Length: 508
Image (cartoon, rainbow, N blue to C red; front, side, top):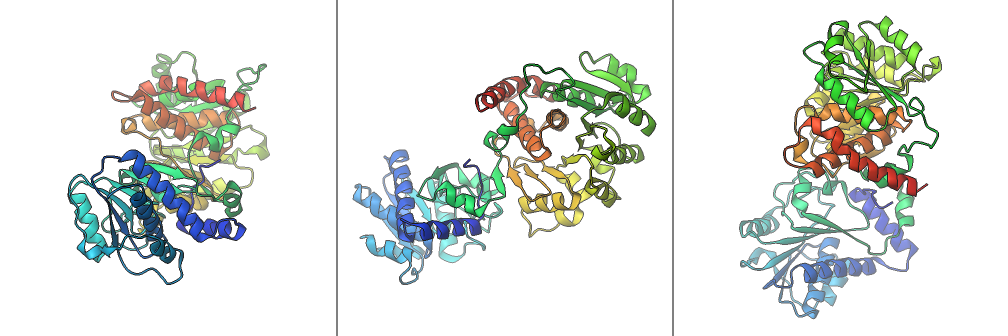
């Protein structure tokens, strides 16, 4: 699996471990990195009139000196610009010494249209805004609209958080090494990276395994081994029973979207739990989805005893208030210790907001021994209602905020957005990268909640189910494209699910 994401500190540790293990030393890794970048420049930009290589004083700059040397040896017109002296005896100093080009001072940087910039100023470890000559060089390149090939990460983008630290290059291509960094996937940095290419420079999978990363790019490799594929002798209840709470007569559509998504994602049986005054409305629109009245906690208890459902969705169109809180707490109290069969609760929309004045009540219920898994799907506003202090801590990245919320709530948190982050209470986290703007439509989140419930119903662990649901939802939306509305998503999931099922069966 190569979808682990390394923080800048973890990447530095990977370098150290690889060097200690040999056979490459630090300069050997640097030469490999420079070779990878030079190959991209030669393949992608053979018509560039001139290549400007901008080098900082650290290892990123050392990579740049290797690139400049290799491009010159290939007959490319190269202009080399340096910012500061590399530390004597360092790998970057060795690379600079091996480069026959004399660097010009970065303060004098000029470039003409038709040229290309190789950004080797700072890389992923940058922690403060570029200033002085570096900031000026970034501005010149951006003002001229020059294509930029960034080494590791565009200078000015934090590898840790994806934040823009003052000014930053907007790269056409970013070449990174061993593994991607969170800053390649988190916004706004992701938008500055262009196409991200991952180069193998000799840091093996065994070295990465020693670091034991806890952050991943969300992709099927992360969760496909546990993706549910029905056995040949499966029947509907063996495939799991998902249940969706409906709102009142004027707010039933969201629950039906969730229910249809749960069914499409593989749940063998799906029931909409409806208030009595909305039963006829729901009945008029449901065919394969079952329907049951649930106005009170007693109604819910009877349903749990009678049908032993596996998972629930509470929130879409439900309404905010005491009833939502009572149902959620009843389900979190109906854990495995009571042998109810409830595997998980997906709390979305109104279900989340209902706890804004007493979030700790929810969190305490979730952390009780034997409680069903809790998955929450907040967008930015809902996240702030439940975790106001975490949301307002500007020192935290979106990844760090999601992790802190998951630990506090004892829940899997799906922190939605164009760069959705999924975080588990045990510290694992994944950043989604296949989203599309077409998903920004009313009801899309209701479909996502249903997919999660459908996968939970089939026994998929909560973190893996959440990651899979986010990826499937995004992939279906991306493939459908313009014109997408929420009602399209359950059917748009079918080819995605078919491919996943085939891959899952082939791997077993």
